[in-house]
Amino acid sequence: MRYKLWLLSVISGENRELSRVDFVFTDDESIKDINNEFLKHNYYTDVITFDYSTGSILAGEIYVSIDRVKENAENYGVSFTDELKRVMAHGILHLIGYKDSTGDEKTKMREREDYWINKWQDGPYI
Image (cartoon, rainbow, N blue to C red):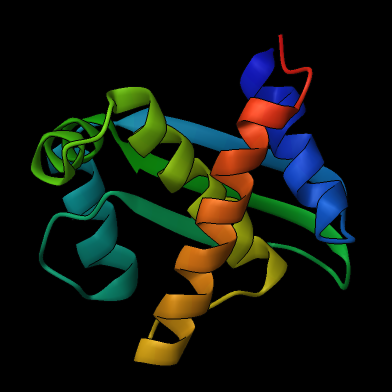
């Protein structure tokens, strides 16, 4: 419930409304298959977002590789839960319209991720 309330605050804080967003938690091999089939990328990734939004109404599917989240947490020296929050926020931010193809886009995406991760501490998400 805590994650749900937090993600709803991300959505409303970015001036969007929620229709439906499904998170699918999976493993490396499954997400690699999805990445290859739909995006033609033959590698592992931590999160893939399918956007079905219309205007400011968010809808989509967000696939998260728990294997990648664990490994990234170790590599970056952060907790599993902080890395999980980052990829969940990342998926939502993609639905909102943030991109991460260029250096500038990646910087802006990281700023918004950090902003919302820090908001976790401020909110009544219990």
